[in-house]
Image (tube, rainbow, N blue to C red):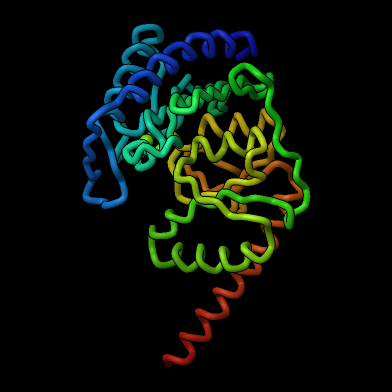
Length: 284
Ligand code: MG
Ligand code: MG
């Protein structure tokens, strides 16, 4: 795979994402369905419509390519192979979209040999198009973007996806302990409810860090490339190598900031562990 090939795929997908953005921007009378009886997992006809349009047009042009789309894949785990694979979130931030909070967007990435080589994230509400081709930098509306370069934790703003804490009891406690420690260590915490833009906001320096656990490949595939191409740093917070298919990650402006935040979170995790042990010993 050459950069030239990646550029061709990028030029193919870009107008399709911009077109699909019109569906998002012009949406009216948005009705919400609850996915699989999970009360916070919303879907609308627009999520399905955008994904359908994108996949149809990709299939017409590249019938041998594979795709992993949020609505199509719901309820099953798709495997990422060496084949060219388009990873699509038709609307990320569906709750924001429904409530007219202008932070939602379309995310499309292309993986070849399991490596993300193209990433496009489009927020038509604010007219912001974030793009990256591997090795060629990250852009917002055609202008090169870079992270804030923040290396000092106490001066940093972290976008921490707090709603994900409800996933289970362990997650809930982990998030609460970490938040308690982080609030004292940094300048500010945000929770914006849109992963694809959360990553792009690290890329263009609106925040210094973005952290989320338990997301899906389509939430992060394009955004991770955009952060990296903007000079940012991405780690898997569980200590493994970052895996787009199982993303638990911290994306930061710099490696130094990442290291400092991880020290604070480790301290929070240790306190949680000690408190859990203490309450168990009191019960017995
Ligand atoms: Mg979605
Ligand atoms: Mg999503």
